[in-house]
Image (tube, rainbow, N blue to C red; front, side, top):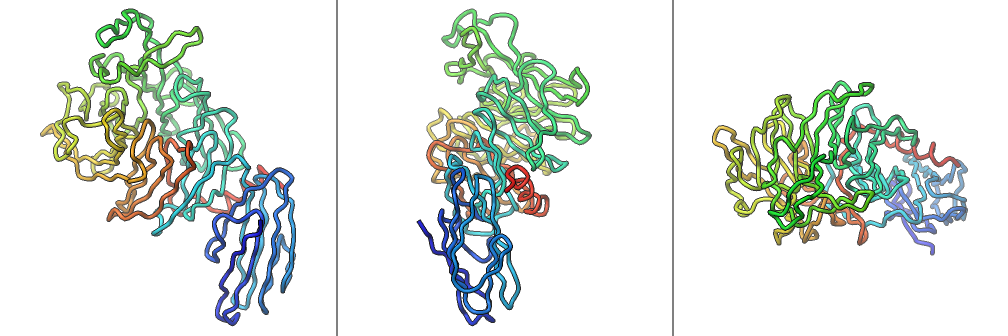
Length: 467
């Protein structure tokens, strides 16, 4: 199918338009302000262009300038690109069209304002991909195994993500790649099984990560309807240093979180499958960690709580949400304060001391929301200061992120749903990206403008997919 697109030229072209028709069709529709496009090609397939240019305009496809009306074909395999330049009396512009693999996830994108970031990293498994602010994927790699999640840009300009056969016991690896696809290194635990839910690269090169540790003794879980000799997994937070075999520091949930704090999830948390067929409990399920000064912020889904943990002391300073303990904060100003969170994800402390998180609302009968609380440690209270939701996210069974942007907007991946949304400071939607049914991204990671160039991303794709 040939799809017509038109480019309005500058005034010195007499108000004429350039017509470009393509098969497969360009995504998005052609716009003179958008430089990067994709189409869906098959291996060994051809991209057909039909061009009609007005007087004074030349179009060069892969470097061959022509004028007037012409047709051309180019053979492109998935990942490869063609370029075409449009030259008028007012100057020249170059456009890039890259072939998507046929099984790359489908999506829609609606932009209603200027997005905050230049690019966004998403992981619709098994893909890791970078979308630009026009909703165009400009870089991607496919993981060799089913799960790819928690992708992020690292300080040295490399990109890392978890790969695992499943989202729990794995075994998982955190892979770090250059944009040309070459593997820099992998990061793992010093003991236990790497948990693929979060990792933080610290200044100086250390990593903060999460590990599953099977408790050597059986545990009596009959108090919540389970067996009296249950197999359970605790979680450890480890600070590891490249080249050092032992962790620099560890913290275990076994030493600090009571079984009673996991009561609401007890009936559904026995899902870890061991090689011998034994089903084990995932007691606390840590899904985010953050080192802030002399404290750690950790989200534990199966306690419906966020904890501030002293570093390096390991003592719990406060607990936000979940079963009340001596360290719990009182929640103020939140209409859901009596039931608080439902399997929340991605808790982060901001520079002003407030805490953001993605509250999934799991088993609470309500949709997910992005929330921010002001923490008053002396008064032992947490006051809700911001809350935002999205009508396309009616429920959330897992995952999710809610990031407060530097301009006071929000960027949210609505956990387990196809929706990713950015909001401005006023709450107005700046863009919505929706995957096709059944696809979602565990988190969304913004790349600030100027941090990575289009040239670097295009170059990386060309290195992986040369013509």
